[in-house]
Image (cartoon, rainbow, N blue to C red; front, side, top):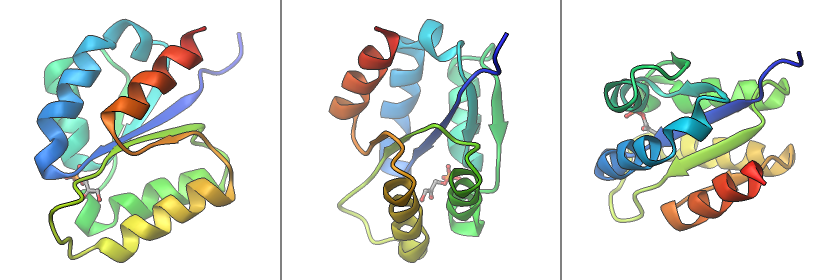
Length: 126
Ligand SMILES: O=C(CO)COP(=O)(O)O
């Protein structure tokens, strides 16, 4: 059997409740993926869905976004769902931009809000 594809999940603090609810609502679909997540986000996803295969990396401000960017560059992440908070300044804004840039460079599907993530998860199921 081919290796499962890898999905990266990230949410800024104001969006973490929303991402946990999204994960719960799509738990069955997400169980078909290998998941990598920034540290705090991964913890929230596992609290909501303890059975998912989630690898937690560093927290975003401590390098987690860059770790996920590196995994995109090596071809180890196939899809990115990142619930971005557009209303709060981030100390690691440059890391966030660099991550999005690599998702574009390597042309992987990237959802930056819940509406797009809902479409992406439905699309990939079909
Ligand atoms: O800051 C983040 C993304 O830029 C998310 O990191 P955490 O999941 O560790 O909060």
